[in-house]
Length: 231
Length: 231
DNA sequence: CAGGGTCTTTACCAGTTGGTAGAGAGGCGG
DNA sequence: CCGCCTCTCTACCAACTGGTAAAGACCCTG
Image (cartoon, rainbow over all chains, first blue to last red; front, side, top):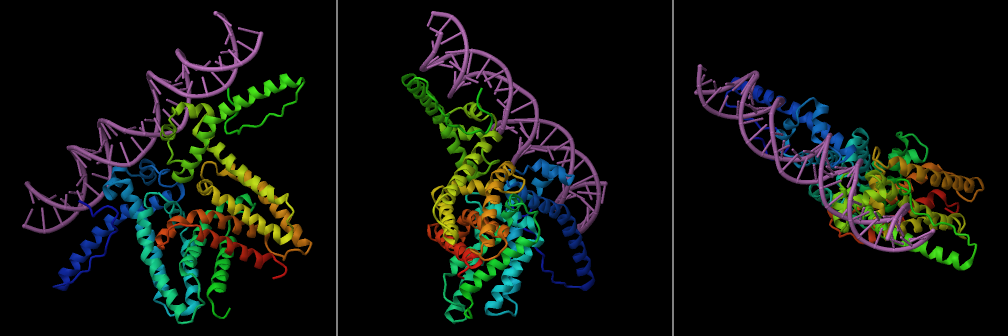
C-alpha cells in the first residue's frame, strides 16, 4: 500500500549501527525515495498548476495524466482519489507558505520591521509561484472541496500571528487595533493580487510586475498607519 | 425561435395608433413578457447562485433544473447552451453594476464626495447580492469562460471612470496619481470581500457585516490619501 | 375549428468523468 | 530461483455531462 491519502513524503530519520551498512541502506532508501518522488512529485506539480488555473472541477485526471505522458491509474495509485490529490496539493502549498512565514518569524527582525519582512516574504512567494495563489484562490472559495483542509492549515498560522501582534500591542510596540481584521485584510490583499489579472486587461494594462508591487506598497502603508507607533 | 444566446429581455418601446387597441396589445405583451420572464428569470437567478458558489464547471444543468422543478431542456430552450446561460448571467450582473455606477455618476455629488458615493454604492450592491460577487470572482479568473465577456462589460466602465478621474486631476480637484492602478486596487478590494469568507472562519470569526465595513473604510481611506487634495 | 407561436416535455445519445480489478514489469532479499 | 514489494500498465464500468430531435400542451388569432 501507499501512505495515507494526501500525505506528503517524509524524510526518515536514519540512525546508523555500522557506518558502511548504514550508508548502503541510506543510499538505497534515497534511491527509492527519488524514484518514488519522481513521478509523484511531477504529478503534484502538474496538479497544482491545473487546479490553480482551471480549478478543481475543471481539471480532469485523464487530461492531467495525458499531459504527463502517464496513465490516469498511476495518479490514482499515488493519491488514491482526485480528492486525495487535491488534499496533497493543498498540504504542499500550505506547507510552503508556513515555511516562508516561519523563516521570518525565527529571524532577527523585530516590531514593525518584522511585519514588513513578513509581508515582503509572502509577496515573494506569490511572485515566484503564481500558481500557488491561483490554488489558494480556488480552494478558499466557501464550500469548495479542500476549503476545510486549507482552514486547518491556516488556523494555527493565524492564531500564532494574532497572538504575536497582540503581544506587541500590549507591550506598546504597536498601536492598538483589531488584530483579526488586520490579518484578514492582509491575507485577502495578497490573494487579491491573483485575482487581478483579468481586471488588468480590462483596464488596458498588460499584466506585469508593477501592479503587484503597487499592491504591496499599499498593504504596507495600510499596516503601517494601523500599527506603527511612530505614525 | 428565441432571442440570441445570452441576450436579456428588452422592454419594447410601444407607440400607439389607437389607445384601446394599443392598451390591449400592450397588456398582452406584458402578460407574455411576465409569463416568459417567470421561468426564465427563475433560471437566471438559480444559475447566478450556482455559478457564484459552485463555479461554472461545478454547476450541472441537470442539478440546476432539478432544483427548479423543471426539465433541463427548459433551460436549454431559453439559453441555448450552458455557455449561453453563463453569458446571460454575466450580462445581468455587469448590468446591475453598471446601473449602480451610472446612478452615482449622474448624481449631484462632486469631486471627492463622488468617489466616496461610488464606493459606498458598489459596496451596497455587494452586500445586497453576495452571490454577484461570487460570480464576479469566478468569472474573473484568467482563462475562465465568460472572462472575455466580463472584460467587454468592464472596459467601457473602466475607461469612463479613468477619463473622469484624470480630468479631475488635471483640474486640480484631485491629487495626481496613477488612475489605472487606483481603479484596479479599488476593484480587487471589492472582489476581495467575496474571498474573505473562508479566511474569516480560519481566523475564528463568524462572517458578519463588520469586516465588510472595515474593508470599505480601508479602501476609502486609501483612496482619500491618494486623491483628496485636502490630504 | 384550424393554424401558428410559445413554452415545456419525453426520449435518446455520444463523450467524458472518477474509480475498480487485476495483470505485468522490475528490483530486492532470502 | 522464488516470493515480495513498488510501480505502472490494460481493460472495463456505471454515472453523469451537455446537447439534439421531436412531440405535446397551452393560448391567441384568423
